[in-house]
Structure formats: C-alpha cells, structure tokens
Length: 137
Image (tube, rainbow, N blue to C red; front, side):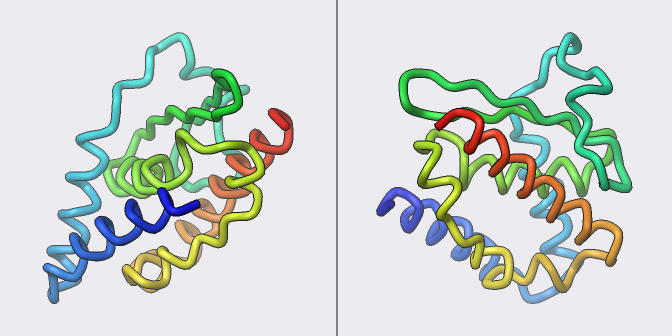
C-alpha cells in the first residue's frame, strides 16, 4: 500500500499551498477539470451514486487484479471531490480499497469544507467504491 502514501503525500502537499478556503475550492474544481471524461453511455440512472445532492455517475472495471474507477458529476465541486477519490483508490487491488482508511480527507480539510449534504454524498461515493471492490474480490 505504499502507493497510497505517495498519492496522499502529493495531494496533501497540493492543498497545503492554500490558506484561503476559496483557493482550496478552486483547487478542487481544478481537480475535477482534470478528470478523464466519462462517456455518455455510462451516464445512466443505474450508475448514479445514491445519496448525493448532485448527480454523480460512478463506474468501475477490473483489469487483472486491479480496480479502475471513472466518474463524472453535474457540479464542479462534486466532480473535483470524486476526482480526488479516484486518484487515491483507482488502480488498486480490491482488498486494498476495502482496507484503506480515507484519512486524507481530514488531512486536507475536505470534510470541513463540505456542507452536510455534500459530506453525505462523499460518504456515499466512498461506500459505492468499496462495494465495487467487494464485488471484484
């Protein structure tokens, strides 16, 4: 799981560059803009994350013993949030995803930045990613 450490370190260092919460929001939006485009064929109701205030489509695929995630959202903040989750969790083995504690969200102050509804949506995204990992074991 050392790969998690390197990815976390990079994300944390990026967020430490910003003192102003608005700058952090802009950075989250930038993260979303870097997210790989999700093909329209995946933007269907069965791929919507339940419990999100925004529309978030999340799909997963397993190649060999590695799980890859793709996602999109109709709002820029949520798209940025899911892009951070994908950076951390995509490209890992199912058990690594299941076992991983997403402490990074507290370390970068993301949970404090989100409204309670968005925080619930964040948890729904995490839960679905872990459900996919269980399915792919």
